[in-house]
View 1 (cartoon, rainbow, N blue to C red):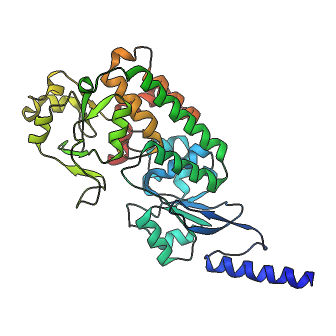
View 2: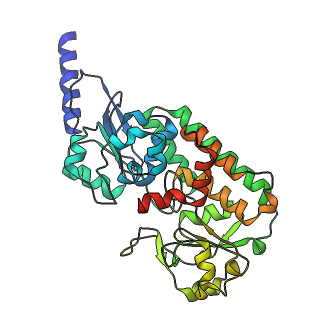
View 3: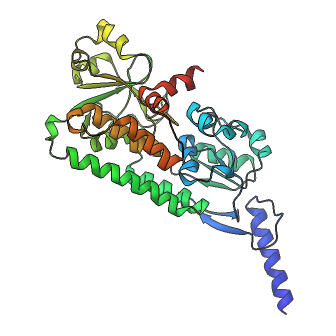
Length: 360
């Protein structure tokens, strides 16, 4: 009777695993059921040794959790990140089958032989429809709050069973936000620096008040010049969450600080179209930093470093004791395990790694 019961359990286990699209090379019991960020139950191998992270910029979470050795496929953006390539040369040998949202080389993904794919909605749907690989969905959106990010980190930590590392990152984030609050909370709302993030070659693409950037700027004691407009959703030729504005709108907002992600502040100062702007008159145009990934996306990296950087930039008198180069080095060392030199840290702050990624 006991043997018959064991046999029945084995058969049921194999059926469940096959339905989940798993390759059952191991014996019964070598799997577990996880719940993804959309509440879907997914049967996965246990332990997980080969995972494909196709969730846009969130591939960096593998480094935060110290599980990068379990990656078997990543996004092209992580694979080609100059900073990651410098800190982890192995990334160059890992397939990058996902380029942009909805563009996945399925053959290359299958050849990578993942036990699990983690991806956002569009990519996860494609993998689920075209393969039998188990897929865990992320709750990815450009409106991601700090609390949403914490949920995402904890989800990854749960999948990889690396909860201690996940909580270490969250503690780092909370400590940074607490520092900013202690230094900036006394600034009256109407006296907070007005910041415009002007992206693209023309500096007329931005992140509106319905995106993650709203909370990031608020945490930094600043106001988002584009707070009254909505930019989430799909727009032809633009990444979701980004929207185009006119020069007239920017001149009407007249921001105190202008952040650009291409070109140079000097070029903006020399352009007559921008000369009436307060940020230009006061020489407060700054190139957005870029590290493992560009900072105009809702990533774990930018959640810590962008608010700290823009706060120090907007209110240097309140952060005289903060050396941003040192802080960047500390973050990458303690969170990613990357030991950056002062030169590399300054390159992050100057946006130099973005130039290498886009032009190299």
